[in-house]
Length: 322
Image 1 (cartoon, one colour):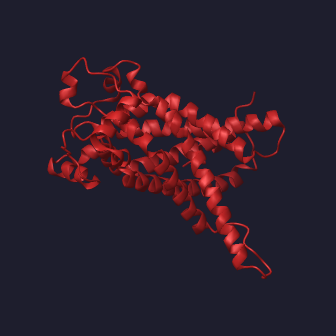
Image 2 (cartoon, helix red, strand yellow):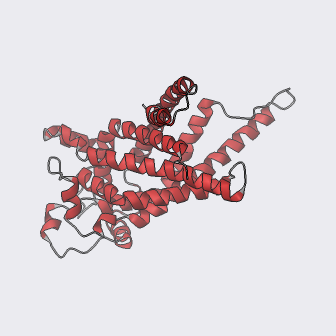
Image 3 (spheres, one colour):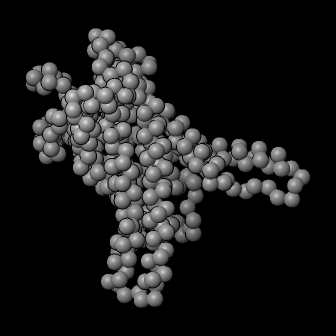
């Protein structure tokens, strides 16, 4: 069976885009994660808003600690995007081959995306857990990847896996909302342009970006209680909790109940604004980076198209992503 170079290049392209995007936005991600992970205890709250985390780092002369766990996060982000893009491309090609179709429908596309997302979540869950624990550790006290994973049991490394699998529905929600908003917008434009010789059949780049950001925000709002619960489950234990060797294992139901008891309904949406801000900025950066990569790809394709030697094909598959 020939190696799927097209899937490989798509996977590498998405992984490099995610790598750059994660590095640029990492301080914001650290502040967001620490803010989300804090659970109110006896009406005491360390962080009242997102900026309190940033000022704490400055006050304690630990500004570089906003990057604690960056290596692990980048590794997790790279592998996760690589596995997702490769899995999506592989499952899509497999579906088209088995079904004999020339294109993939909306429902099948969502199923393929969910399958790729599930594979990604299972493979990268230990790295996801470790990076969350590093980010939520006290500034200057973060540990290395291996030590972070070896402190607990193997099951602890998969904390939040069930929620991660649940969150694979996020893209499906986003696509559904985007499709509905797009149809309504185009329908309204057709009514306004009634009687003219032409009517809009597609969205402009700006409209697509706005609807994409809006649909992603709506999907994030709908799934955010699960996101907050996952962060709390994966958060590093405080010094007091570490001294209690017989501490109970965190469960989804236990975390949900604790948030309800100590913070009420608003607690399920703590840090929502920061999550939306980070998600929208990350998506915009990823699209911009992939656009630059695509332009380089076409230049290299025209240069290498005259040859076709297998070795040069491998070089092309790698170089197009830089």
